[in-house]
Image (cartoon, rainbow, N blue to C red; front, top):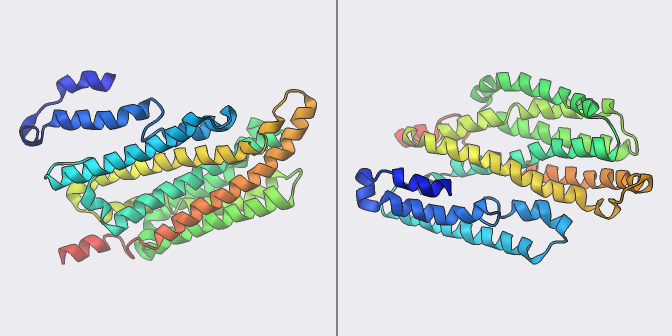
Amino acid sequence: MVSGYALAFVPAGRLGDRFGYKPLFLAGLSVFTPASLGCGLASGPLVPLVEGRAAGWPVWTWLSIATCLVMGAVLGWWEVRLHRRGGEPVIQVDLVRRRSFAAGQLLALFYFAGFTSLFFTLSIAWQQGLGRSALATGVLVVPFAVCSLTTASLSDKFSHRLGSWAIRGGIAAMLAGQALLLLLALYLSLPNPSGWVLVGPLALAGLGSGMVSAPNQDFVLGSVPKSQAGTAGGALITAQRLGAAIGIAVIGTVLFGGSSSSGSSGGGGQAKVMPMLTHSAQWATGLNLLFVIAALICAFFLPATLGAERAAENA
């Protein structure tokens, strides 16, 4: 509704005289308005995943996901059409066609889906599944935070020296840390894992994580024309946030799917929920691994060195 009022203040300008900013604005608004109602492009897959399990997966959840796919197709068609007419689409078609840009976008989406949902899984399993305090859960992730901060501060040097292998090595370390976390903490040490068991895996995952986000941004922005760097940067941030939202929605569905039948109140119900929740955390962490593996595959499509693709075009 606020966007509709803003329409009166959108200038026409030189491009507006030719293509019409306001018609384009209305077209974009018609695509994204359903999203704001929970059934369109942005919210389509998230709302049913978050609410569908508790509601018993009614028809509206599947219709919401289907609507999301339709809106995505409409948006893609409109952006391609606008590009061919010589307009300025929000999603730059020529950027998407660049292999390094597309790979960096997918890497950000998959990596953030696995990265952010990992701590969602840990916090829920550690508190609701094992009955630990919120303070203990916060202290639990300190090794990850410290190690991630350390390597992130050095990631620029590593990426200039090692090229895209720095990102691949970082994702591999993150993957190894998550695998150890699944094996040691959520499988071998059950039913009462100690926080000390998680120090090593989380530290290793943190060392890898600090090597991924900033260098990936450098590689993506370094491979596009300088005139399109702003658009590329915005698209990259959008991919990160979308990946985080999708990861938590999907992982949350898996995590709580195995404990929904035991949600009754009382000590007996809680006694059943705790082992079931820790068991579903194993499946959730395994899905985390798949997200990170997908990000690792995307990393092999990045250019070998920073600015290599742009230099080749200028040669």
